[in-house]
Image 1 (cartoon, rainbow, N blue to C red):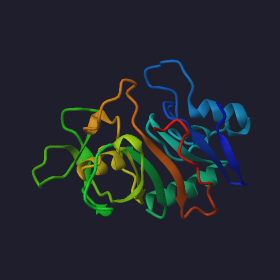
Image 2 (cartoon, helix red, strand yellow):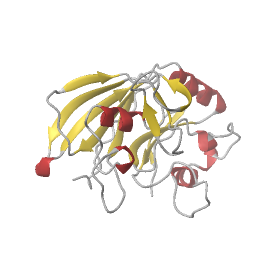
Image 3 (tube, one colour):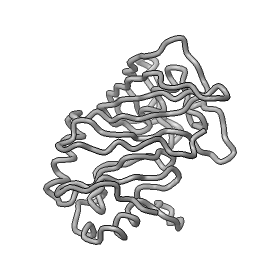
Image 4 (cartoon, one colour):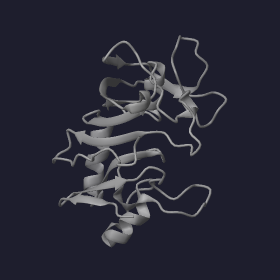
Length: 220
């Protein structure tokens, strides 16, 4: 597995395949991860980065989400990257696949999100002031825009976010009637392999131009 796509003096732009975690799995299950692939290709990334940012990796994607991940080449660059994410200065562009349809081509979804009170892996969106949840509500905004249609009733949609709440696109898309194909956690049509289809294509607003990663060839 090759991870590195492009490099500058401060940044490494990486490709994470679907089905591969960014970091080793918490339960110790063996298998490839983006961090190990990065360290194999760029051994100098094995340095003293803050906890949770091993290898200088500045952000994460879900296991089944493919696409662009950025790593910093120094602690100073990582500090800059974390500030960009925290300040909402970045527009992160995604593509997802759904077998659902809606009568519109574009919408903005701004439901606050929080952790599900009963299910550890799920998030919930705020349907009312009394929506059951755990912890605090996180502000989140997602722009959804229709892309191309595919055979078999499938459609590609584009999603843009400047916030970065856990499962944000998956849950905002589902709340708008566009559950991701395969995303059974949020009502998507189930697949035998458990996969859903979400791809991080590029990031706008970075200090340098970031590469645009095409949708994986194995998408339906």
